[in-house]
Amino acid sequence: MRYLVDTHVLLWSFFEPERLSEPIQAILLEEETEIYYSPVSLWEISIKYGLKKLSLHGLTPEDFFAALDTSYYICTEIRPLDAISAYRLPPHHKDPFNRFLIWEAIRNDFTLLSVDRAADAYTKEGLKIVR
Image 1: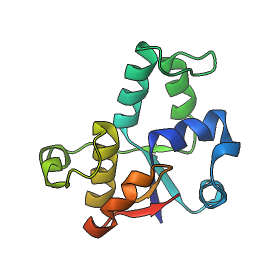
Image 2 (image 1 turned 180 degrees about the vertical axis):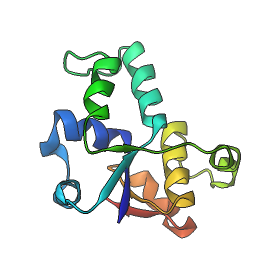
Image 3 (image 1 turned 90 degrees about the vertical axis):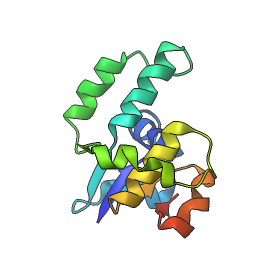
């Protein structure tokens, strides 16, 4: 099974794993699963860190990426067709980062690991989600 983590799940898995739900914790510990993150999450982290809206517990975004890059997480590749076709996603969610993660999960047949309840509105569009 292939999973895509949203930005909260990615950060909490490193800094506050106790905040993750039991189902998400169990999935992250499974040896046979493929756990992906999106470059969009890195962009979101960088922007929020630069605006001082995000603490990385003493790390810079580059330090966080160095730790991420040596972890079991796999980086997705944002393909041009994924980007250009994102307009097809109904406007249930207003956050552009979350919208793209949702679209990326739908287009590439990932199950999204997310704490975002607003993402549930996209199950009609084919989103598979675990919270």
